[in-house]
Amino acid sequence: MTLSAFDDKTKQPQDDDLAAMLGKTISLWNELKQSIAAKYAPVTAEWGFACKAYGWGLRLKRDKRAILYMTPGKGYFLVSFALGEKAVAAAHQQKLPAAILKIFDDAPKYAEGRGVRFEIRSANDIHHMVRLAEIKMAN
Image (tube, rainbow, N blue to C red; front, side):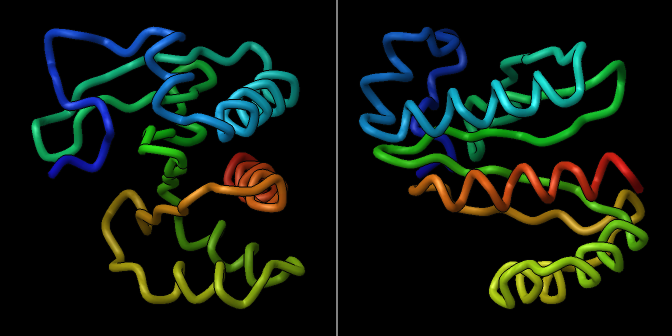
């Protein structure tokens, strides 16, 4: 099974496909995209197909810097970040939930930082993802 609900390399997800797959969480998907675009304009949204194991995902970036990645699932979506050690340390200084900080602490360290994924199902989740994007972009 792929990480994304969309695993056909020949068919990039369209808006109607995305709405059908995400269901009620399409509003959260759009809210996150709009929040990031407003805060870091100009933001480019690019669909990409990394490999069969991951499927299609949407990368939000400013210039050449990736802000976050969004991967659609059935009735939810994932938000992924790669944060450097400065950003991880800054996240610990914020009032983020312990569960979010634990995900960072447990993530393996790579040259580009710590790669983490969060499952998004509620508006509260969006609030935390916007805060993490702020931390990433400030560090």
